Amino acid sequence: MKKFLIYTLFSFLLINVTRAQTVDRTSFIRDSMDVYVNRALTNWRIPGVAVCIIKDNNIVLMKGYGIKELGLPEKVDENTLFMIGSNTKAFTATAMAMLQEQKKLSLDDNVSKYLPWFKLENKEAGDQVIIRDLLSHRLGFKTFQGDFTFYNSDLSRQQVMEKLGQMKATYPFRTKWGYTNSAFLTAGEIIPKVSGKSWEAYLKDNIFAPLGMTNTLALTADMPHSFDRTVPHTLIDERLSAVPYGQLDNMAPAMSICSSVSDMAKWVFAQLNNGKVGSRQVIPEAAILATRQPQDYVGSVHHVNGETNYELYGMGWFLQDYAGHRIVMHDGGVTGYVSSVTLVPQDHLGIIILTNTDENSFYEALRWEIMDAYFKLPYQNYSDKYLSAYKSNAAAEQKVIKKLRDSVLLNLQPAQPAAAYIGRYHNDLYGDMTITQGEGNNLEARFEHHPKMYVKMQPLGGNRFFAAFSDPIYGRTVFPFTFQNGRITSAKIKVADFVEADPYDFKKVN
Image (tube, rainbow, N blue to C red):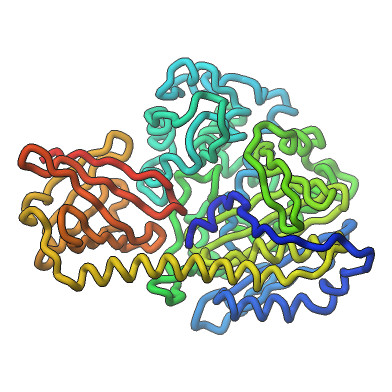
């Protein structure tokens, strides 16, 4: 289910919609939003949502719905903090474009000019990488490649960047788009080299403070200490539960900002006014426009109005056409949160949606519902349609998990004695995994760079084990082991697609 998240590749439902009738549908915003959102909170099992709609330089709606934490009475309001995940990327890209306007760098400079040690596994490609490549996901990696190693780990920013240089690209350099969080981190770490300030200090001094975003946090470590904050939630065995905050500051320029709809509205106002706040040019117009220039082709997108168009990526923004309107947008997903920021510059429309569970697609449905209202398209009740698709996917996933659990209950014996699987395993990118004896034939796996996490492994017969991660974001899956020449030689480790799609091969060391 978590495939809906972090950066959703906008897998919109293909719905054949009758073309727009020229009627004023903005009454939906005025008269029906509260009922629509509150109904969705129940149907989607979302604790809290915050929504802001800006049109023609006016706030049409700014409101919190629901609660900050399941089981507690505190209500979400317009100042309540949420993690915004990958909506951080537009801030990082804008900061880099601002530095270009200040003549402190060029987005076409080689990354090695500022980070001399920077490299890629393909040396020739590493020598050619420019800042713009980092900000537009065109290094040749698969989407989310390496993120199991990096996400919520104890690696430092420097260690993440060094490991980025060890990853073998899936595609030739600049030939295929692939969403790469560690590349955005690397871009952000150029900021201290040219400004003398850390990424977080530069954003605070040059974007947050000038825009009046006084309630916004650059780092996730500060979130638990904030007074008016939400708590992250996810589904664990089909029950909605609060979970610990993700510790994401080693990837900060890609995903760490925490904000509220009132502060995010100030960001969106500036975006819609090409960097101006009143008469003040807080962000250079050229910097705003630079982030929206197409840099790479993402793919075809099937829009909710039945159209099929191209989807492009700028720097920190996805770019689409929808019903004759140019859309600038991004989603964000981290542990327990998903969010959406949408700009329709020609229509002077901005939409912000923040939620505190990572198990919903309502943030997508509401975005299109609001746009349809302003674009005079017929009402479709996208929330129910997205929910139907979501439930179908969830049921299919639960069916797979139930089958695996039923197999465990058969008390199938592993092909080898438990001792054959126990030991230290190594993956060149990740590092070490250690497997120890659990109860009976059960095993337990622990990972070097995720010291608080463990995996309970139960036999499925043969050399396969049902693996359940203690951190639910990593999911439940099957770990197969390879047996060769009378011994276990390796294990294939797979985490949830929300984190990384491809498995890791760990070789048994001892």
